Length: 236
Image (cartoon, rainbow, N blue to C red; front, side, top):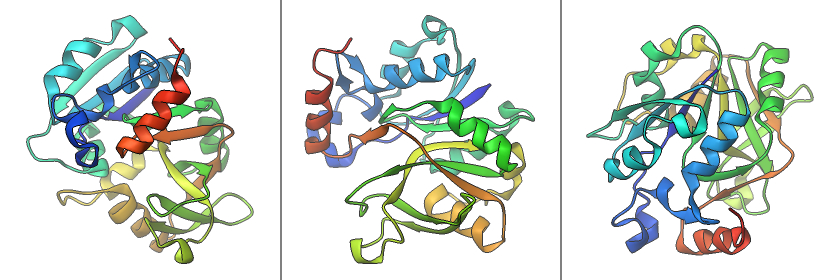
């Protein structure tokens, strides 16, 4: 099993916290956020990780190395210009082979089981399956509306609270079938939330969402980073 880890974000809203470090290297529970994600991927049967880099790339290369400390093999791609979440996946197309693969945002902390997402993807014969979590404030996230089978029938990126179709948010965790790769437009940047998922829905493609037990924590602002750091205090 392979996974694309999106690790190129600079985290401009974090101010000085990311001046010398890329966002996925910020420490929580005594370890960088990306270390917890690599643990989760390895426990879930992933053996190969494809990781994009941009801001302070040497920090991630030096810390993660070849991935062997997790039982993984990591391949890096430096992006002088950010390609966007979907553009990065398109850039790795030649490495992804013919089986479904995970995509995970490298600056999120996930407390969930990936097996449930992968099993649901196979059951629905989906092109894309989005890991979903419930949130009270959805304004900074992609939000979806599902039909009774779990098929996504509406996707809105970062809506106003009054315009949100539900409290279900995109957790930055996907299972994608390789057939999606030719459907990613060759524009830069190209993002799943703005460019790919809405277009797939308009075309009637089988995009599903699976509400996952557990939670996801973003570290997009100093306040969110501090809240996760406090929650993870004592973890190792």
